Length: 290
Image 1 (tube, rainbow, N blue to C red):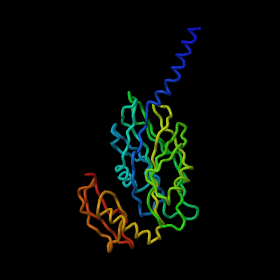
Image 2: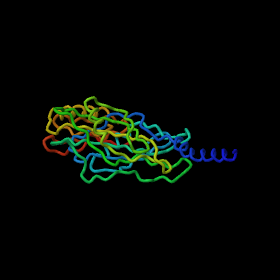
Image 3: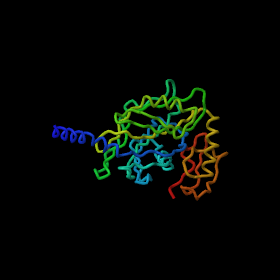
Image 4: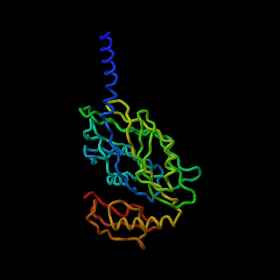
């Protein structure tokens, strides 16, 4: 009888051990995030996926593009570089890790029926880059399918919404935290997220609950001159005062402003501008890490 109890106890410990190991690992998450750069140029395919590598202090070590369909990857990286991350932990000790960060630049020329994802979309899955170690091998969330949010009717609003999702071990979304919200867009983001599908993160090959962050950048229809002027004024101030992020090009006759703040995160490199009627639409405020 006693022998049977001992064997049963040992079997119980053996079965419970994998679960306790999984619970000992806590994936990284974003502690704070602000507004992101909203492009003026038309974006036809706006899903950008980043693989962000973090050290054991939660500081960014590297940002790799897992999906880059156009010209907005650098803008996405600059936005992420301003965020604060909470590092992963193993047995309550901080550990280096990775996190999937997604940017959705919603196409401005929606047409009838709203924007749709590319017809032949391929899942975006982070590669396995880590060798097993005493801190384990963590593979972050993958994107299996996505949907663009709709744009509010009769609106010229522009801006961004940043959400942090909890994805469980089956890949299901179990929670949404708004790190940066805009009342006019929040409900559209919530509706779109219901159509997203994810591949769960894994730790030592076993699916676990984790976090991923999605930034949605909304832009108004390009025909809206009022919206364009509002954005031009706002970004002119940002470019002049901070010189830290790219801004839409501004008309030469009204918004050409010298950039003089060399003390920010990105050194002042001057401004570029182009004529609104047909010039180049490259960013006006350029900078490089100082």
